[in-house]
Length: 196
Image: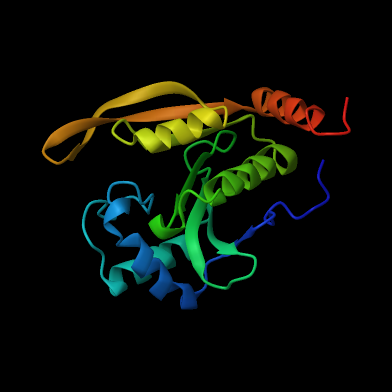
């Protein structure tokens, strides 16, 4: 088991959202590239721009949520959120759902991968969770590839879960079991230089 904080990575850290984060959250949540994949509270429009007041309500619902962690993704050398992460166990206390959102200008720098590593380490080293799940729309090829390369396997579909650009889409659920994560972690550690 790691002795490091489960919420501190090499280049990012995860921390609770604070009221001063609302303006940053408002800016990146409304980026056109995030429409349909913002992973906000249920009932929040996913394909429409949000006002500062609406984003304030998102912040309030996150800060009052007793069945989830909603964390700001922050660069270690910065103070502003570049994204958000969530562990939600409201549906099933032993199989939470995870989500990671990185602001589009910050994507493709490894931050999402590092956030997912931290969330998985937290889930499997510090809690009794046996599996974790993620939801992704079938049109979100980048999101599906992200999950696959991190060991997640498709485990189900919710057909015609929503509309995007006038067409129905399915929501895919993918999961990762504790033994799968542990085997991958051990294999990765044994492949490091100086290990045999």
